[in-house]
Image (cartoon, rainbow over all chains, first blue to last red; front, side, top):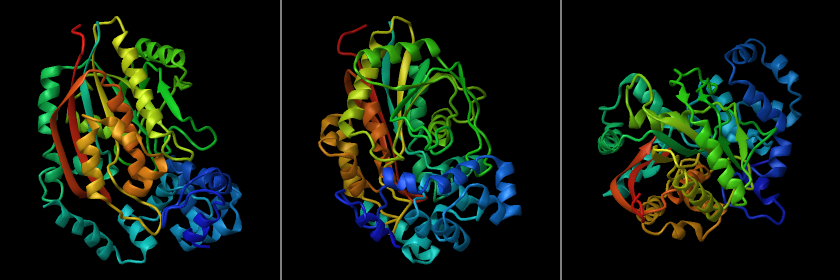
Length: 126
Length: 284
């Protein structure tokens, strides 16, 4: 499922292209995944995840879609499975991903291209 | 008689904290952003506030989705920063002002707001970075803290109109406080940026300029749309503008722009800084 699919599934609700809206339905769906990510505020939990990823995931009762998204390091799939970026950022940190890496992965660009696009906004500043 | 001296508005990107820790302020990438702060620091040296009331959003440090308040007011004697999941260096602890916190809470509830009240509250980079930018390298923060967290994480978010009203109610509470404190207000976050989804990397310079131009003289202009409209124009995390709108509301007098700075990009963010001085309508 893509984000666009996820957004259009917000029946009767406003959608914004390419922009996840973390509403009640997403919050319900994503609770286990976000709870796992919240646990990573504790360094010991980050170490435990690194030591035994599958075992750690099992403790939080992630859905199969959430497990697969984490296994694949697939940010869009994590969001489609209810992940919220404020919490996913902690998991991304464990994977050594910066916000530019995460942005590039979601937009299908190389990291260099993603950064170049951000810098290109400076042309509008003149 | 307390006085509201002014409002400081600034982005709070985590990478700013990392740049400070590494001493990168004069590097070409960072300098245009950090150059916005000497006027703020000079103003603070002259104004010497005693208390900072900070409107910010928690990034999954203190609040999880098990209990997510729309508005939360700290009423603790002390607040600490903590690991947000990246093991970055921690910021200094913050002394609270619980009596003034409770005065604000009483006034808010008396004005038909329903805030969550917190006697234990970890505060994250979105509060600490603006402090470090304002008082770089100090041994202890020279102000006491009253943190006010606004939910920008889980929809439905509060409306811009409600956030402005919240800020105005906080401003009225501060004006009715009989203590001698001089108060500075902070609004942190923004401006346009988006971290998640296929539109990640989105920045909207014309919209940011509109916000900067209207925040001081006409904040109502920023409240004629809903929070989803802000997200459409400023990106998912650009909605942190709500913190700015609330902080602007707390400036109850005539405001005068002292300085502003706008630079793109810092990390994925259009970074902005603004200082509005507040002149009481009725001299204290």
